[in-house]
Amino acid sequence: MYFYPMLKKVTLLICLIYATSLFAQAQDSLSIKNGIDNPSLLTTHHFGIFNSRLNTNFKLRPDNKKNLSLNYTSGNNFHPFVEGYFPKNPEIREQFKNTIWYHRNFNFIDQETTPAEYMNIVIDAVIKEFRLTTNFPIAKQQELVINLRSYLITKGKHPFSIFTSDESIEWFHSNIAGGEDPFGRRYYGLNQVNFEYLDRNGNTLKLDNNDFFIGGIEFSHYYYPKLSINETRNIYVNFGSHLGINTSKFNSSLDFGISANAVKQIQLKNKYQLNVALGANVLHKNLIKFKDNAIDFGNNPYLGTFESNLEITKFTKAGNYHSFGINYQMQTPYNKKEEKDYYHLRGKWQEIKGGWHHGVRTLYNMLSTSSLVYTYGRKSYKLSLFIKQDFEVNNAPDFQTGINLKVPFLQ
Image 1: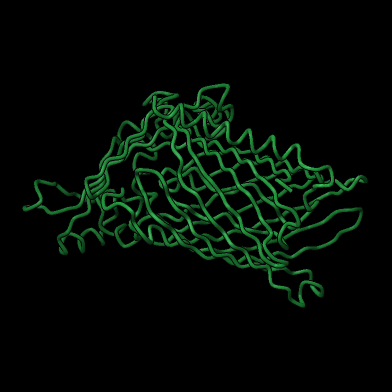
Image 2: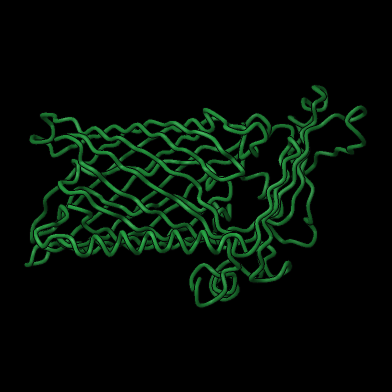
């Protein structure tokens, strides 16, 4: 298969860079604690993986050393097959606007008699994301971050997807919360890859088990202004500009975004520290398209994200630390919300108890997720683990886990 040689090359490159960092000079070290240094908490959304998107930066200042970060994420995405019709007739649109979506009747005949845009989608896969990130301090108050992201589409079988496999999620639903097969995973069959999308322009995306692709490379510049509130109130802000080049054959394009973040740090007794942070960013997707037949991964040209974070840290006598954080993230919809007033959806609503419509309907919803993050930090490395849950039950993804390792790099 074509993806194996590429996967081997990427794996070899990561191993070589990691080995180089481990043999860096003995005096090389990371900043022991620099605000909230989260792993990549972006979701493995089946549209989002084809664009850059932006990780929130809750650091207080540039890292004092160059460093390398390896981030691995696994997320279970599931949407049963659903069709979407978008009538062009203004009278039908107005009628649908006053009718709840599941009571709208639309009998498509042809484009002359009943003109309408059409799409269909089915998503069933455990998506693995691999991120390789390097941070370079380029001035006293500025930093450059370069990120390479890649993806592997899998069935999610044990033991490679212990928490995000279909078996684990449906065991939880059956025995703890959710009920028996609430979204139709068992109806379709566990441990499947069914990843197909026909956009409204007639372009088709199909991914199979073990398909691997490099999603793109991203460049971020952060400016950390020196303000009086840094000393008087322990409040720190930073501003970012972001350029993303999407390299997959499905969406060769360029993205651009900006971000603003603020962190309040509170020193507590007994070597405890509390960090509270807020951040927001906006990304212009596909600002420049390199191919005319790029797949439509949402007709909303902008993605905005709001994020909040609360983290408590305990320092040890040796100066190392353990931190526990709660992160909440909201993202704007992928499609223009006005279409929600007139679309018509078709799927197996009788066979599937709930969520048969999610493949289209959730493209018009705000996406919100919560994450629990644990980090162990010392001067030679930082190790983070996180779990992420979609409490809106959009299944995009349903449940996600990740691990991040940061080490000094080429000092």
